[in-house]
Every structure is written in C-alpha cells, then in structure tokens.
Amino acid sequence: MPEITIVIGGRNFEVACQAGEEQYLQAAAKMLDDEAQVLSDQVGRMPEARMLLMAGLMLADKTASFEDKVSQIQGTLNEREAELEGLRNMAPPPPERVEVPVIPATVTDTLAELAARAESLAASVEEKAAG
Image (cartoon, rainbow, N blue to C red):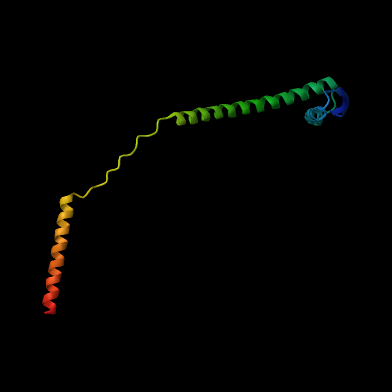
C-alpha cells in the first residue's frame, strides 16, 4: 500500500492509499488544502485539528449544495421524461377529413354540349366569312 505525502494548510501529512489511487487522493487533498488556505487567509494560524475540521465542513457544505442542485436537476429530468413518455403513449389524433368536391356528370355533359355548340358556331362564322 503506497504512502504519499499531502500538504494541507501548509502542513505535511503521510497518508496511505490503495495502489493506483494516488492521483485521486492528491486531488482530494488539493480540495481540502484550498479550503484550508481560505481559512488561513481569513483567520490566520489555527490548531491543526480545528483547521482540518473547518476545511472539511466547508467542503461538506459545498458538496451538500451540489447534491441539492443535482437533485433538483434530476427531479426536473424525471418530470420531463414522464411528460415525454405520456406523449409517446398518447393516442394519435384522428385523421383529418378532407372533402374534395366532385363535379357532377350532368355539368360535364352540359359543358361538352356548350363546347360543341361553340365550335359549330365558330365553323359557321368562318364559312360565312370565307364565302
């Protein structure tokens, strides 16, 4: 089990960890050291136990805040997923009825008759004009 030295609040600590987890421990120690530095800048030098306790509490407060935000986001996500599932399960709207007007056969017959008469009149006008 490897032992590494971490620095928190300007103090060195020897800490053991599982093999391969050194970088995670260093990252966690850096976060704790950042909080300890804030305390040191605000309060000055304090006993080691108090510094570690206060820095840990500050990290715990930040973590709780992030957890609340994640919980709110998860709640919103769950609501949207339920809404989406409801929309997926919704019956499709009824098909829209479209009526296409149909020209009655009598109208087309009448139009054909009128066209024939017009052609006949045009032919007779052409005959009289030519003759």
